Length: 589
Image (cartoon, rainbow, N blue to C red; front, side, top):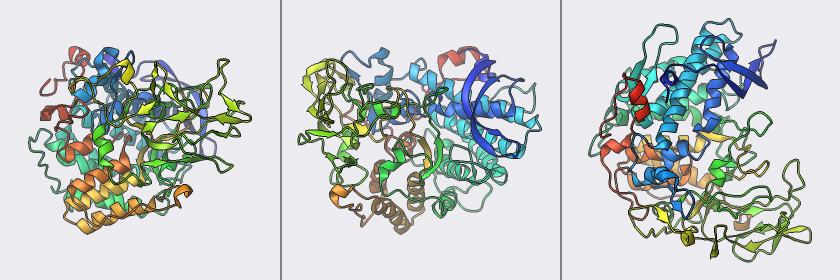
């Protein structure tokens, strides 16, 4: 990492989509080519670059926040699978807790997040010095993004770089999580009057609105106690400390900010839980703040959250396939025992002619009437949710297209691509030969239940997607309020919120559209499990585990040893330590 990567964005050509201002001050999505630099960026271009960092790997890529927040958790793991995914051990290290300051995953995420901080600072500075229309709104958005990137950096690394954008000679500051969280909260609270309410001033959920600020504030208050006492060996964090500026406790503030969102008529829980993660989720009723993804000639969306868990021989069309990488841990799969009828666990796909894809060996063919946009390729739709057992689907003919039965897509029993004698039988257990190493032999690459929570977008090959990636959505807001109620001693209110989530989701028509089943009781252990059911694979799990005292525990079924509290945050990359003397390494590294 070069020294000036921390301080500023170089004059680099960025191609991106942004909201520009028309003569009537309406913000519309248009394509801009903008040179981003310390003095040359336009206000709109600088803000566009700050937004672009959300989707340029950071929150949409397998190696981004998914690796940091999920692969280090009790939900997900990316093991080495035969000849694939060794990569110097960087993926295994995330779950084996052997990462060091030179781990490539950690280095790249530090670079992306601090680059987000830098881009946001550039946007604040550029907008402040301009006379752009809607200046106060754009400036508030830039500061909101700065707070979002800074908070995420503090969460993961305990430290974050900052420089006063109003002072060209200002020195680099290194914010420390425990000392900085209160100021960050105050800053975001101060932005609310200048931010637009979602849907006003032509805003949409890809913009940092008042509602995004409420969600971020709830998240910051929920984790404030951890930030202030990160290395507490017993995980006995003071969640009921007085809130910033007085007026209640941290949990009171979580309840207040989440209630503003829950009581907002604009938002509504989806009865089909998986609509939140579908190709058509843009503008969804639960989505508060998202990474907007579009497939266009300028910048393609990222399909990683979907295809990273699919086997290489699973194909949504003849033009793409899965990667056979990440999977669900046995521990998380086992937590669903007795809850496989929960609408969030799995959902079958129904074609327009009424055909259900059962994925159980009874399927012979499915309609080929669903086509990939702009092509004549038939589109095979996989089921959603957690997939286990023998898998079925289309296979390629020797000539390239999918096998057909008349005008329908033939469904066959699948085998693994790189071990064709190994049936594609996804086993919940991983059963590593060495229990302390997440390594599978070539004939073991079928192991691990798979996560098909995000819909695979087949439009232009493996790497592209139109699926917007939720950063904050209503389901997660309910889990935050339920947790705050429980930590405040109001178990009945916590139970009510969890049951609202459970019973608002319904199964598919194949099962009579049955709603989820309500619970009769709740405690910390039950709530922890319920948060996992609602939020798995959404890059929230690591901080949840820390709050509940689970992060340091061993996971013997998935190669995670017991760990020390210093592992609750990641090391600063050694390349940064070498060039930025103001930054010191975190404890334990």
